[in-house]
Amino acid sequence: MPLDRQSFFEVMASFPSGVAIVTTLSDDGVPRGLTTTAVCSVSAHPPTILVCVDLASRTLAALRARRGFVVNFMGEGRSELCLLFASKAEDKFAQVAWRPTEEGLPLLHEDVLAWAECTTIEEHEVGDHVVLLALVEDGGVQPELGPPLLYYRRSWGVWSPVHEAEEPDPVRIPAIEVSARDLRWQGAEF
Image (cartoon, rainbow, N blue to C red; front, side, top):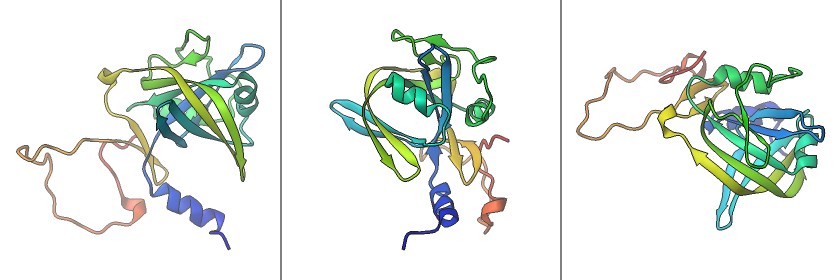
């Protein structure tokens, strides 16, 4: 018997994930988008990724029709933007800076650490989601924008690299046991 839904959510929430906003255009040229942590590299040759989308997503019809999208990998300080794209707001792009890619797809150019423009090559319905397998046609990196935004146990945070051995720890405190609800991690965004 499979794990119950709530337990599954708790297990998966314990795995920190990067946060991305997937954007596309509807048939009538209206930009659409959603927030996701379900993005994964599949192959380097050819460059392929997968994105999982809830069957109830209002962006799914546009993703399926267009068969092209941009994965906007989000950085520190962008949690409010991610919450907007996770919402049911009618016009998520009204106050958001974006520009079209060469293929005309919405790129959140002011807010991304990196981006991948993709063409869907396969779709697979699995349970309550669709897995979009996609070829990466174009992309870029903006390293000057700082660390990536992460999602862990239902909160936002940022990744900080491990210090080199010769560097002192910025803060040294004795280890204590805390519950998951008490956990605060470096750079948490609220």
